Image (tube, rainbow, N blue to C red; front, side, top):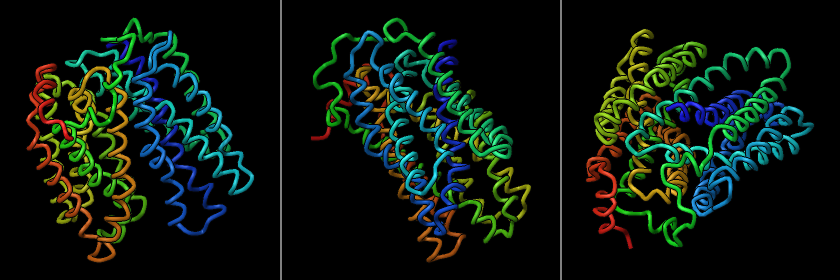
Length: 401
């Protein structure tokens, strides 16, 4: 697990950068744009890149063979470019230069995000992947918390400092990965010549994968909608102040970070599917109860419990996606995972926002619970038994035409 902690620096740097980006770039846009809707649209650029680029990059990395391995070439190109455009982002001089820097930064980060995440299953045996995913998500969560805490202080000194610091962390993380992770030595299985059909998208879409991707889409619709619209719900439905509403989300995030590693350990012991089902059922109940909660203390306790259940889902879902395919398709499956989660991130806030406009804020959590129910139905239809090659043979008979 030592190499997993070292690999976690890659996810650590990504999380710090995105946390700072989401926290402070809206302030930059606000200088030029008065419409909140347009600000929100420009802030979703990363999801569009994830939707179209990351599946392609993931698949390309599966088929790449160099002396540094499959993933490292993408990190060597993407991370320095990402650091550069992150650092210069605050030095925009107009809306045009700001948007150009945002696009270039998002493009650069799309080059290495899927390959970085794919390194985890590359260097980790299947039975240890849920624990490894818990570790890298824990480091990602710590990175996000650190970004909000230290980033706010640096921003108060000068608005460029958080972004320069994030760029430095990215370059340091790249140095750590290059020094301590050697794909050909550390990869659990490394094939010098890729199979010509092993990484095609069609070859990966067996019944289990399709149902799992559908479940991922539905639970991310619920999560992204609640995460985006909760502060408005707290203010307009519960009568909370803006500070009380935003701080309440901290309980959800902190519980997720604290339970990330235990969730991975339980996934390895009890099975990934069982832990995901536990998390879905738990969040379905939590989302159903929130509309009847009136006390701020009870609300925050409920959200904290929700964060634990979200860890059960999130920590085990990516290793489950990887486990239903071949070792040569890890990058492809990583891209598919980000494709459906990004599609949910793009579609969920406007969809649930439209429902709120039509029926009021109370519909937010009922809609999220309904989406979780759809995810539960998809998961219940999966017959994957998590026993490695046997499952692949079982699923091959159900491939889609």
